[in-house]
Amino acid sequence: MKDTNIELNNTAIDINNAGGWGVLFDLDGVLVDSESEYTKIWNRIDEEYPTGVKDFARKIKGTTLDSILSTYFPDPEIRRNVEKRLYELEAEMVYDYCQGAKELLDALRTNRIPIALFTSSNDLKMAHLYKDIPGIRNYFDVVITGDMVSHSKPDPEGYLLAAKELGLDPTKCIVVEDSLQGVKAGEAAGCKVVGVAGTLNAEVLSPHSNIVVNSLANIGISDLEGLVK
Image (cartoon, rainbow, N blue to C red; front, side, top):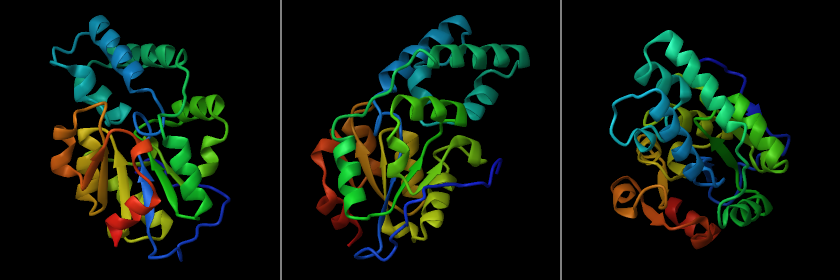
């Protein structure tokens, strides 16, 4: 693991909530509306530095940057150029909430349900996110980024770490994901899984999800709690 300094919110974690359960969110395509922009960015990078991988931008969704660079850009010079280009294009992005995301986060926070964020994003991107949406950090009791794990999704490491830091058994946690790598990671961690269709069709996510919704506007606290009861 690269960084064991887990980022914690100052808000007290109420692990004695009814039934002792919590929610572990992915970021892109689940909470913030950025997946379509990342598809454009990675398609552009693939044009400039061809990988030869069919549907490259979709294939890498949910994967850490380190894993993407080491797997698809083995030449050190090209790898550096790709990373530089990615940061240039990311700097032009503007983040905003996905439909229903802020409302669900508000409801969970009001009801003192422990919330963690596990994203494959690195600390540089997270700083950009916090600048664009200043209040988003306050929702999470724990934030796990791609810089803090050794294994990328679909490995369950990140979600297991998030559950541990919340003080919860993984079976009492609900993972909310939009990528195939992500729902597989949640399933492998032993969590209940909510798939969010949009980035991928529901039929792709459903084999590894307990339920699939079209957006977070279609699910509430009672629905989530029902998954862990």
